[in-house]
Image (tube, rainbow, N blue to C red; front, side):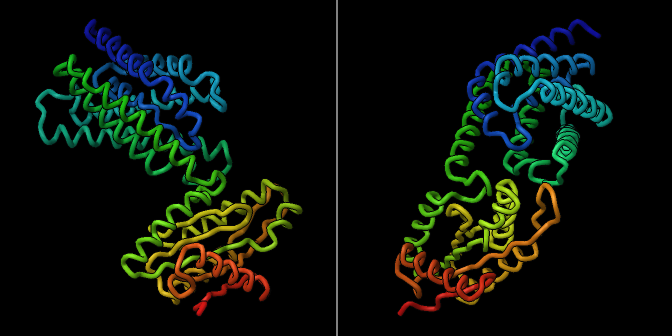
Length: 374
């Protein structure tokens, strides 16, 4: 182990601590929103260490940075316990060892020397290997802890994964700068800080517009976006469909199986709705057991077909309570469209709501579509 490696280790740790101190308040707030694997930006420094330092010093970097994060940013935040930090640290150390080994095999250590297209390809491969190792370990741990194979919880949201890849790319860039021009690393601090804050703003926006149980839009956000969609429909003359969806006998689910199972039913119904509509359709929860979907540019036949697919999907979905056998729920759906069923969002919503009551009066687990109010 050369003295230069020790100095480089100290430099990386110092830079990592400085970056963490700059974003400490932002990081504490971000942690409170985290329900999936959390990106804390330390990968910028741990990957740089894996690419430029011996394995023992790279591990030391991970330990010191995570110890600092625990002491300064995470301790006292609800749900963040010491054993979780220890697991995360061990995971990062293992991922660094794997990435460092891969970098040596691909001859990209140290980065920046004899750089060329194959060096770039090698660095991209190392990033992919680090990301895969880290994500796999976290995903398996979450699955074992929760005894569930929810891939969203195991792997995290797409945006979080993209953010982690972006952080690893900055880590590779940091390694190159440390090898060629160490003093240039300082230019990374402002982008890191800006990225931290932009992610926090996105999380605030998501929390303020999203229903916490289902992940769908809440009523206020859905209504605001739907109103703008109706304005565009007026301007350009295209149709807009609305579905009002209500879970049948939902009160019985809560009374018989408990509110936790009722929440599970809401989540599964929300997932069923989301899976049967297009990516640009607007899904929301109106409160209680009622959901709403906006279908821009859909014909009456398409609206009916989508509603029926949702009804069938929910009907075959099994709700698994904490104890006892699984059971099924059904939904009643009322549908209406602009301009046939009304000239405004409120009028179309009223028409769809009336159709929903008609579906319930017809025996539930039905779809009723308003053809025209004229």
